[in-house]
Length: 481
Image (cartoon, rainbow, N blue to C red):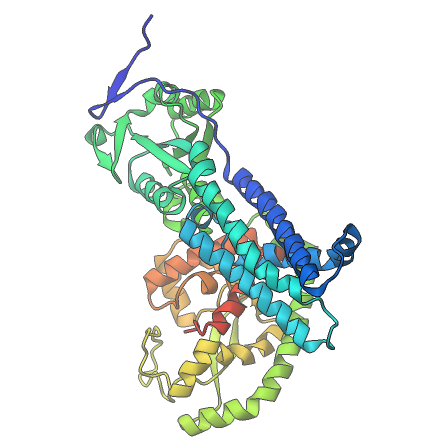
């Protein structure tokens, strides 16, 4: 008997061979393992070259003596590479982005090592091998990423059909194209709306009604089905999805996949699935995590306030000479549970910046910002007095930025789930701050809410460390606003 063939949107789709697929977590495990091996190989080669230069005898004993430094450098690599987004699907599969992330990580390791080297007595630390490591590791790691992006990713590409060709389906198709084009191929949409049949959505065809999904999935060797319908599912649609699941196909919801790819929560696409938005079960409810976070807040705020006390005379003089008015600026903000508190900052704007008494969104090139104030904002020095708020427990070092009461009421009325931000303490820095620009409108507030909700759902020591490292990078690169 001849194999059947069928036509979809004018194209011939013959039955496909079965394909293998690898999930995102498995991709990351592979990247971690191979990166770890290559970092250790680079360190060993660096030690060997350093031994040749210093006329040492390279041996297993010498490698064993240096093993603590190998472990420290490898740990730094993984921490900094994660903070530099080297393991995000879009970066890992893009040679140019991978080169930038890896190069930046290696240079940061070198800078950190040289800083420690300069603080310690002469000859306290090994010197030559880290220099050779800086030259060797980018070549090995970048070569591996080229192999990964050109061979491994395409060989194990996932094949998806999106259920629902509406707003949610269009959004997830665009997200897959922008964030995971080499990992995912969207073959088509299925939708029961007759008006959408044979239509094109994001340059992808609507290939049939939902009832045909099991047949289409089998013929096209689909590995994934993405459910982009946010209303309650009828029984026949659920039965269709279960039939696909029995074929070994992975079923994902649009909000789940969007969140995994972008590190944001798609607030406007949740619909009736409100439970995916709320932090009902996360590390923030864990007593151990809360104790650790509070202890870290106290320790870091005390150290930061000591540094601020040393810098304050110079900063205060510069603020006063640049613009008449007080050194500090106080403003009411909304904290955890909707409780208001007084936030303290170094003044970066002219006095009477809001002469009519109405709260105003800050602009990108705000003329109210003084010359010294612009520098304070770029370096985030204007935020240092907020360490007092952290010490008092009104804020945390990391969390959603506190908003003004005047804006909170309006944003709650316009943006679903906005009040969810108030389930945790506001922060001096946060996931939205290191991933998105300054909030200047309701549209910006919605985008920042997507990041804030992701943090609230996934808060952990690891995520806090990544945010802290990204904040330090923002300060050093003068990217503050």
